[in-house]
Image (cartoon, rainbow, N blue to C red; front, side, top):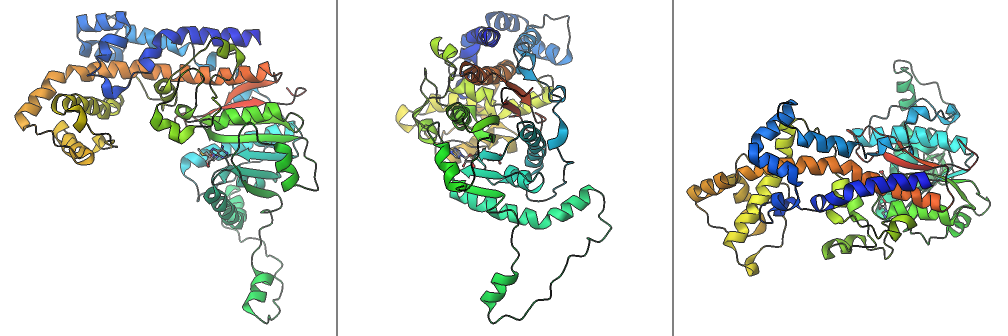
Amino acid sequence: MELLKEELNRVVDYVAPYLQLANSHTVDFIVNDTWQRVIPEEIRIHSDRIEVHDVLDAFYRNDSSITNLIQQFIEQATEHELKHSRYFKPIDELNFPKNGSKSSVKITEFMSAKKLHEVESMSQFVADVASLSNTSLIVDIGSGKGYLTSVLALQHRFKILGIDCSQTNITGATKTTMKLEKKWKVYQRRSQNLTKEKPPPTNQVAKEPCSSNEEYHNKYKWKSAIVGDLYKQRVQSISKTTNMDDILSEEYPREDHQNVLLVGLHTCGNLAPACLELLVENRNRIKSIVNIGCCYHLLEEKFVSNPDWLKRNSVCGNPTFPMSEYLTERRFALGRDARMCGTQKPINLKDSDEITNATKPLFYRALLQKLMIEKLSADDFPQGMTGRIAHKCNTFREYLTKAEKKLDVNLQVNDQDLDSFVEQNTLHWDRLKIFFILKSALSPVIESIILLDRLLYLFENNISNAFVVRLFDPDVSPRCHAIVALPPSQL
Ligand SMILES: C[S@@+](CC[C@H](N)C(=O)[O-])C[C@H]1O[C@@H](n2cnc3c(N)ncnc32)[C@H](O)[C@@H]1O
């Protein structure tokens, strides 16, 4: 545990001076003079001296004739990513006995390519963990539309309970599972390249005449072999105080499940910490966990408040960051925009087109903010959002026309004035690109703090057979890190 504390300390100490940068919002980039306030002094002075554009250009081209402070910043940030932690286990080095795995079944409907990738990878991994831990029941928290649960039940034949707070999701999940089940044999055959062969004949029973449609329906309607038996769904909002004993005795009155594996795929915001707390509080039943969190911006922090508009979406009355006593004693806070930054999709920081495309909407929005502050009184300042309008606009004029409509304002700027306004502020785009690159480099470091803190919470509660593993390709599914805890004797 001391080693984990040391690691966390190292990452927290590294990030502390850059938290102001990570918490700066691009909307205010020009009006708050973010460049002067938060860009590390040596990068700012160096870029201002040489021309920001040339510094960026040299960075994209890997030109070492210009001192490459941006590159150095990225390299230092990378050293603090999860992949360098001793608690990060590359999946192929785990050497799990593969008796839980089955060759994957190619599902071609129902899910997006991203969801399919997640479900295929996670179900295989969960199957291995379940087999290694001798699990009798898998409970999926925040099971959503039931993709993971249905594949675990259909392909791996595990007993599984999906829990979600949304009735709509649970109803949808049951329907999706039945649709998948009906097509499962086809998918299995396709995966084994047996598509051309006819399916084996089923033992057709001659249907006896029925006196009513209802009788016929009840007698011959297709019935799921798993729903209600192998596969159950339950509507419930989960928190750390949820009583697992009550849930299990209601759902399985004749069974005594004492070896439960708790899983969660993209347990958003406070739900991921709640799952870890459930493990700690219910050790008599829950023996292992595989949990992937997401939406860190929805977390509630102990030492910094969320903005009021966010509170409405995420109040659980139980702040969930930091989780460890260690960071709690340090009174460590990340801040909402830093957590948002930790949720950012990875981007190729060396690709100038990618950076230009990614920053165009941010630059236009920052320009609009400046223009609105110049033209509108505080009373007339709009509260609404512009939404995703920038990508379809070729010029700031086009953007402004759409934004005025969305926000219901009229800034009354003629074309000539607008051209000169854009011209005067062009330098800010290159500066914003540097800001964006630095902030993006911090994104995995912030995720690393959140996940190492969760892991330390488990260690502090005597669950030390725990680690982090990357289950998905981050380009396909950026929230790809699972916290895994196994029973003490395993691995
Ligand atoms: C991001 S979705 C993930 C759904 C699913 N696991 C998947 O990957 O497709 C998160 C799910 O958690 C559910 N959820 C959020 N908070 C919850 C809570 N406190 N208790 C139970 N379910 C919750 C939501 O309704 C939603 O279906």
